[in-house]
Image (cartoon, rainbow, N blue to C red; front, top):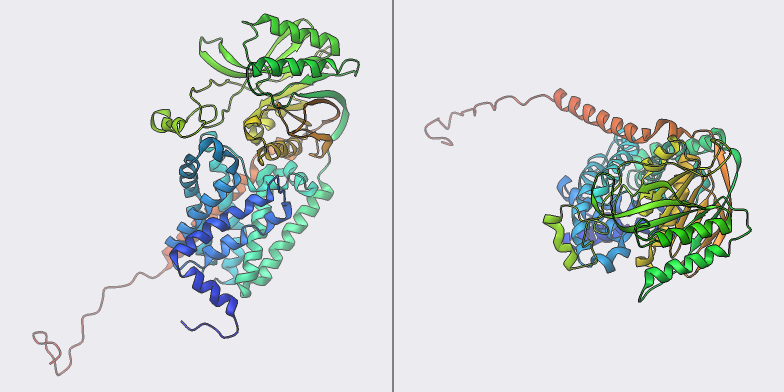
Length: 538
């Protein structure tokens, strides 16, 4: 094929893409780029163009099969880049997991190529502005299942610090923000690669901007309904011999320093208590003393072996509320566990992961229901808390359910001590901003070793972050809010809208295939005077 003179950049790109090996390397690299939009780099603006190189590569694939391979390889790059902080724990096993989970992007690669490959018509390119983001959202929905790793690294989560995006989250959750980010990436791809459809791409961009502006102007803000004074205790990194007891003692020391500050609640991080309080009543008594000293209940997190009400024995992670007289009876057992960190899916098949990394040697047990805890107050006016444990703050449906159950403050108790020095602590803390904006309720993210943070009901940060290099306590005046966000009321409607778009595409393609004329039987050959059936060609 003749390459047009005067376009050396395109010539080099085509020559590079002609090599399957170089193309594969480029796909992995392109898929990894969106990771830069998340904390710690937090280049939120980059999310709106981060997928463009990957999409351009996919659309240039010579066949749909190669586009699916480019989608799979890009998915591998994306999963490794977004979860790279797991490498010290999983070692080579992270490549195996990324290869399996990356398969979800293969259909997306084929879909993108089918709409934008070759020389698409303006109508087909315009349809891609809705279809390609919808296809990506199905991937995010599928991998949000706990057994596939959960909703970590959803593209919309990169916008956790952008006020207009947080307002969008209050309407349609993180799903709506992901759709917006994908639509802009698709529009930019069309602008670059499909000159005939540039008007449609510009129109799509304008629609995204107008939608965001309309939501920013007309969607109501959470209604203020008072304040709560909540303290976070972060003991910091405590390693070595008897680290559990020394961490407890440090938390105890920091809590005593909060006396006289008119608190409503003190929150300790995940695994802040390492023994069942029924078997170690002296620990419960020490925390009760702290409650009397500071004049507020203390929410701790117990990581210990115990027997539950149904007779099941094993290790639970439990949020436990302790007042001046000891445990109040309010307990929440963590429901969604971290794959490989707290249990191994299909252990009989994947149990070998324990031999190559720091995977869970024993499966922890899980709770059966969410719990809303009520602090002491006048009558039924006590502050209502919705506890979550660590990984659970990544799940939009859990905070939504707690809000529907009446929680006024969402609290995530976490520990990222295994990942100090990586991007994980900042990424985890950022999720609290999204959950706050989605639910219209403030969220407290309390950790053992940082990052600890508090966000108001609109997703804006309250007070200062507590970094990973700090052992301290901090008091926050947390704004409360009443009312119900559209996301809490209507749930995951952007997911259903994306399903409807894909269903419409399938119906349209099916109708087109039915309208195509069916080729008739081949006509018999025509014989000339110089040939016969017995001796053709004569």
